[in-house]
Image (cartoon, rainbow, N blue to C red; front, side, top):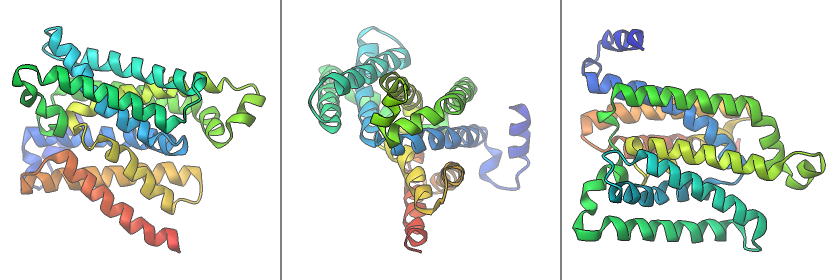
Length: 276
């Protein structure tokens, strides 16, 4: 990691001379492959709405942490996101309601509960960082946490990609072949919940789902096979991240939202390849 700092510092660019920008650039280069790997499977499994629900439900995890007197509510956010992911998976299996209905109900409940708890005494403004994110204040410890998360997600992706992708293509056939579809889906839902929750303070819950989905969606417009799909998502996510970071530095805008705008530009450009 020290070598990365030295390489960035030698770049003949104004923004690269600031330590907080060096930290933010490292974070972007870690988040890009992390979100790309997850985003490809999220889209293939039609879970885009689920990841959005997890992001917004983080409000309740923050509220629980605040009520417990924790300085950093990350652990309560992780615990609540994990419980919510498992609950959604259980309801998908045993309820007659459609998946989008279940997710909408759980998100509505979780968001409402979080807003009620956080707004007691007019203290909601203290948690605005979680709404818009603050990538420029990332610490070396948080970067290390991103490294560990990326290693975990990459390991899960390499180990379970084939059965997960098979299940998303045809759940009935996957069950007939003996794949534990429900356990695979639950496990992946928990991984998505952990990744989204850990990165919310950096990106912001208002835009985190777009950052997760848009690069993968843009790559899907252009890719002809799965390898190109994943690689394209990583490249687009990295480009949008770096360009958004630099743009936000000079414009003084929210970094997460600026990155999403660049990602949307790449998505619009990808439509031309889709037509061809």
